[in-house]
Amino acid sequence: MNAVAPTPHPGKGQALSGPQVVARLAGLDGWKLWGDGDTLAIEKTFRFGSYLQTLAFANAVAYMAGQQDHHPDMLLAYRSCSVRWRSHDVAGISHRDFRCAALVDALTTPDKEGNALG
Image (tube, rainbow, N blue to C red; front, side, top):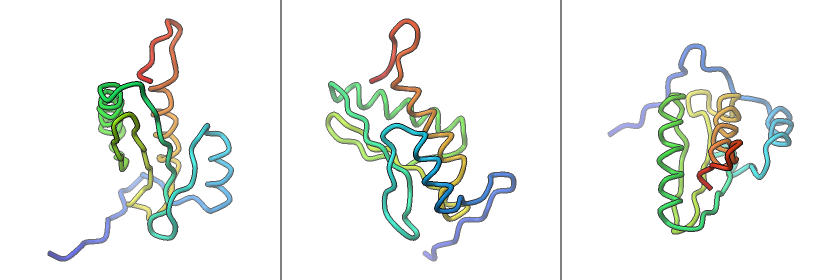
């Protein structure tokens, strides 16, 4: 089977420049650059008290990603989940990746009642 290059989706943005990515990373807690070249992405590893909490988090990220029509790579382990964002349709890191990273962070940030996944 031949691989087909992703087709850019209209209105989904464009890849950010290196300085733009570095500036945006400064505004996110714990996110870092991962990979290089064609694999460059932003990534953060979230740690949990149990395997079930890890799975609940991964499912919440999957649901949010579906709502955003933008899907991360995730690596699940016993009590951790790494989330990696990259916009394949623009061959780089885009504003959508940073927006989705902030949404993932919100899943583990306690609300007024102290409820959070993490």
